[in-house]
Length: 466
Image (cartoon, rainbow, N blue to C red; front, side, top):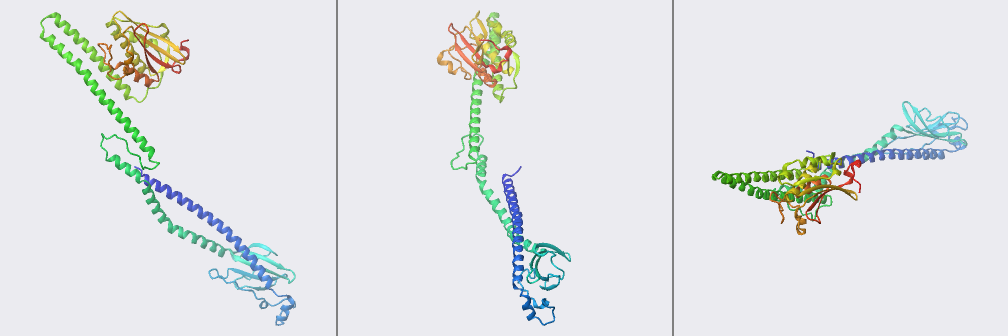
């Protein structure tokens, strides 16, 4: 497992090191260029200074000992000033040549060979394997040429010493900087450690929100997400507890009835009473089976995060298959499917649609009197397709309409075989599939339960006209 503190420390240290290295390279290059300019300027100044100190030819004749040629002083007549450099002694070298190529004078560190063949200006010359940077000044009136040169090896040593002077403090500071970065990152991550400690100390049943007062701005979104998760988990737990309690209650009653009817059938010698008790057992098993199936259906719908990928299917074929199930025949209710359903294809999760349609159809059949008719119709309404299941039952009182999709809610006109789960399953299944449930009381009596689909889910060739 990666450590966030180590990761931040490495990022900061590497970033700081790269910046420091880039700055050092930049300082090295800029310092080298600046030193080159300064040393070149010094060469120029030194050459001009020596040129200005050379006396005229007449004065050199008077001061000479008579051994030199006329107009050309001996080498000892030239006094070249020595520039002292405590750490870079004899860095500058100076030569004075006559224009006819005779060496008139030189400094102690200067070589015997000419430093530069050029008459004036800067040049570089290699003498005895050493590279020299030379500036030449020609004095035509005196008939001499002054050469002042730098040994580039000494120049490089000067630049390197300057860079070392910059790098040594950096190398000493980097370990201290690393320690400070490590401590700073640890200090900055202290709120995360506190949050982790608070969560670790919580019990599994403790789902109350974490207080975010005084927390840092970066951790606040994490706390909000955690609090939202706690709220969702608490809601899911509450729904699960209610579901288990209601399911246990609903199953207890039919199971108790089945046991009672079985005891009656076993204890009675009357064939008619026994047959009636067995009939009640069969009906009770049917009701219990339906309740168990609905419980499994709603658990399956709520367990899935989203609907499966949409696939086109024929609505009329699904409804025709549902009509053949024995529910309508047992209640002696006729189911009529609108001819417009044939060939109507929609693209959604087929199992969710089948689940919703089956529960709506069974609900309509259970609430319809014997001999009644349940119609399955379709129509287009603005940008929606409506699939309606109309029955001839008592409908739903207006005051109960907001609660009919609650689990295990059974209103005033509840059916004997009902459990209060059908409409709740339909609403959740359609919501996962991207559709809606709409309930309306019919003017002539009965209920119209409608599946409202966006036209985007209906294949274009199968869309009904207004």
